[in-house]
Amino acid sequence: MASTHIPNLSPSLETEPKRCQELWFKDGTIILQAEDSTLFQVYPGHLSQYSVVFVDMLSLPKSPNNNCNDQHEGCPLVKLSDSSSNLRAYILSILDVKFYLKLSSAELALEDVIGILRLSTKYESLDL
Image (cartoon, rainbow, N blue to C red; front, side, top):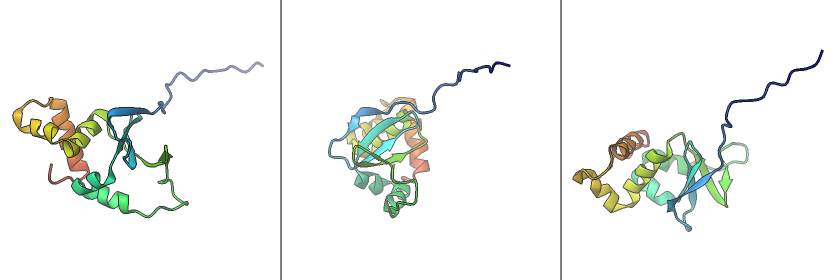
């Protein structure tokens, strides 16, 4: 009896990483990866300044025995379950005063406001 080959029709779960050019700082020392594999190279100090969760996450000791030692281009890589649009809005609200000031002037898209609220709650960013 001949075997039947059943092709895998489901899309690949891993997509090729792509940089968010707007939030890719060459001198950034940590890379955040959104659920769709969008990469953000930023500064851990800014994340820690506004987020209790990032303070704790970034202070964990590195160990060769755990899976938290991913690297990308020589920087630590933190894989997050957040959408790239939410993560972009959240990071901009921390780094860019002009973006953050748009919150009070009704110039910011509703999707961005929702993303900031969602992630500022998730990452315990009490000042946002």
